[in-house]
Amino acid sequence: MQLSTRLTLILGLALSTPALSQPTLSPAHGNYHGLGEVLWNPATVADSRYLFQLQLFSLDVTASNTAYAYTGPWSLKNPGSGLEFSPEYLTLRNDKPRHLVGLGLDARGPGLQVRLNANNGLAFQTRVRTAFQGNAVSASLLQDAVNEFEGVRRSDDNTFNFNMNAFAEWNLTYGRTVINDEAHFLKAGITLKRLIGLGAAYIQSRQLDYEILPDNATTGDTVLRLHRFEGGAGFSNPSELANLDLNTARRWLTKGSGPGSGWGADLGVVYEFRPDHATYYYTTKKGERRPDASRNKYKYRVSVALTDIGGIRYRTNAAAYDVTASNLGVSQADLEGIDENNVEERIRAILRTDRYEEQTSFRMGLPTTLNVDVDYHLSWKFYLNAAVRQNLRGRFAPGMRTFSYASVTPRLETRWLEVATPVLLTNNYRTAAFGVSARAGIFLLGTNDLGSLLGGKNRMGSNVYFGVSPLSWANWRPSAKSRKSKVSKVAPALKQPVPPPATPATSTPAASDSLASPSPAPAPADSLAAPVSAPVTAPTDSLTTPAAAPATAPADSSATPAATPTTVPATPVTPAQLRFPFFLPGRYTVLPRQYCFLTRHWSDQYAACFRGPRHSPVGS
Image 1 (tube, rainbow, N blue to C red):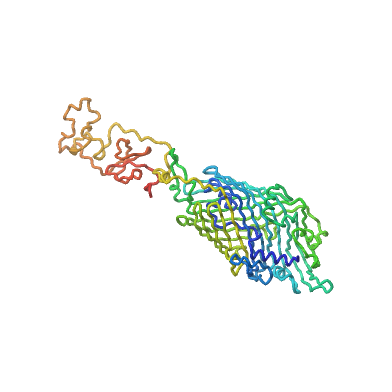
Image 2: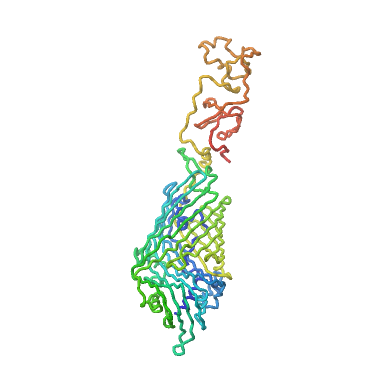
């Protein structure tokens, strides 16, 4: 197969089908995405909504480019029409000088996420990624490839960077709560990755000057002459990229070794602003006060992560070259039948690599990215998310890369159901797309470009992802009674009862229901205090002395005027002096007439209420 035909085929696949660019994750970033969200930010494993999640498998397949739109008949509405990759179905949409093209697959195998306790979480998962990508590809080179290098023309100042890469990984993630200061919550996480390189190849040029020559009169071949080539190439076991399927991916995961190996890491933090943090507590049967792990507590959440730090060093069956060549002739025979099985042999022949020093190892970098998203809780179960994923790989760096994108996603989220509708700028913020994502119980299904699947006019790529997690156990939700406990929404709670202070030997003058004063002032006829109003210093036989009764005091006595409840000092009282159905151990204070939030009563007498930082009705 000619190289031009293969490039046309790649463009056709990238434009029309969700086949094998670096895959993109779901941009919804919901709180119940579990292991999928751990790939976006490892800190999400802490304080997760899941107590336990076992993932069976998930698959994310993506194809994209920035130059040509597919206008062929195939779509989900017309699946029987077949895929047509001929140049007549590829329409140039962009005249920018540099373009992207890519096909990628991300297969995640068995994985496990566990909530260790309120502050710590752990996750483990397996993963296989493979991709063919073109970066910084000159528009003229792409156009000539689609036209199968027909015609006679010369093109200079061309660049390209093509990479093929496949690797498996074993990931271990740990996250914990760093700050939990009432309204401010911060958690952090890290993922360590053991990488197994399975196969790789790259060819790149920082300067390419080529000319398409007329057919050779003798052989009938079209000759491509390279007047100037400055770049490099490398390969290691590229045949592993052929015939990719799920069985091959499973074999790679269980193989445990390959021609390449390396280490990688993800780092992330998540901040949450929780203005109503005190309303998300409940009281256990033992009287302990705990946060409700089943509920989202934030008004807004900010997530920042640096993912896929590291790379893979290929040492087995590996060769790499730095090439500076001129006046190289490429015939039809050099390009005939090139594929994954013979790409190493053909690159050696085309670039005349025997003239250059051979390096016996090379490094392929991971698709390092910066992930940032802000999630805002609108009301009830509705959220709005804004996310940016920025590629950090250099233009000519060998290895897999992520095509940057930005998204805005409204979503409806519950424990067992979620619907999200992302609006995106993909392919390094060049292409607008509209997607949809749905989660129902253990199933997740979505696409980030619905229009391309339904036969839209501007199909620059496609994406589909789905996953199955047969055991997804959300955190236990406390009963409504325990969540509405009279203590649960008052913070902070007293862990140990504090006994009220002892009553002094002499009573303080107070209102009409306090202990009577020895003052000769007249008391009301129905005063309940009269039988016990004798001074505490009276002799033991004072009950036989009528003169001791305050009722015989002269009405015009001026020794002590009658007490009036104009101001009341905040003096501690004993529970025996309270006129309420019940009380809680703790600090009590005598206050004027008010509503007691613990007893839910208005008091005509002086009330005793809990003195806490929050004074709001429990049921509010």
